[in-house]
Image (tube, rainbow, N blue to C red; front, side):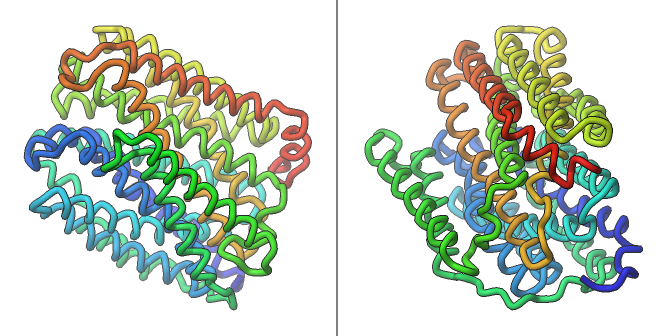
Length: 469
């Protein structure tokens, strides 16, 4: 680390990084409301339409660890800015795409940019705010802005799709990211120097291929009807991931440093991130289908219908910060998980309702409070006690877990919902499949609750450095 003068600028750094994270998170959900318009103009089938969402998530998830490791090797700020320019370039490609193939390639390129920027942005925050009460506040701000990005994505998508074109959903990123890249260069000093870290390209490549194989096996693009082949592809990917982890545990400087594989509060952070990512991805996708299908809303109406999620998210953030400072990290996580579970159960009820105000509105409000409460503590746990040399890799693990589980969550829960309800005509889909998917999401949150309720988690979390924030 550099001199203390660097930290005098830390809140400005947080504002810049958080704003960029908002745009990156926005792009993960901004496409959802625009999907029907994209499907019509480019004549996409349902399988290809899923890839418009998942191409972004898969490439980001597959390369986040490498992105973090590149930051450790060449400087987190340098790789962060490279990621921003990548993201802007491929946003332009997606915006002008003349065919489904080019659109999906553009989305994949956006994922590469996100992988480089997100891991190193989180690493910068974890290094600038290493511990104490300021760290809790910093992660509360970062999580609130990131969560807001997911909601704004749905709102912006509705406005742009209805009044301009779905292409502006991607095109609007270009001037904003270019401006933020310039602001980054002017605002954030080069305080993160490169470290003497071996890149471990071979394991990085194997891990990227493994994550992609798992995702393709679950999604089943091109092999939808061959369940045995899909399972085989996913199993091969899973075995490759296990092999990489085993190798990293027995080498001094693998793609995942051995010291990050020892039991710590970070593991509980990863678990919570995985659960929240898996459920949130499905929530936004299925929620949009309900709003634009049975409830008959236009893209703009569907977008603005998510405003209650914004209203609840910020009280959840304040609740998280209060509980972390006055109770314990475990109490914060337990509270957020149980509220989230109740909210997702309300979505199961909402699937049967013809009134937005009776069904979707209260479900959104309660779920967002839970998500807002659990998100900051999850990210803080996942990046706790990271040294400067491991900041990029540690943040990369957290972001990889988030992206991969979003892909798996969308694919699994949406497949369950549509297989039961049918997907031929969104206006006439049955509620039973959607309700079942939301109940399974609620059950997953309860699983996380009981994981955090264990005696072992109580000892590990409440004796960690975070317990004294």
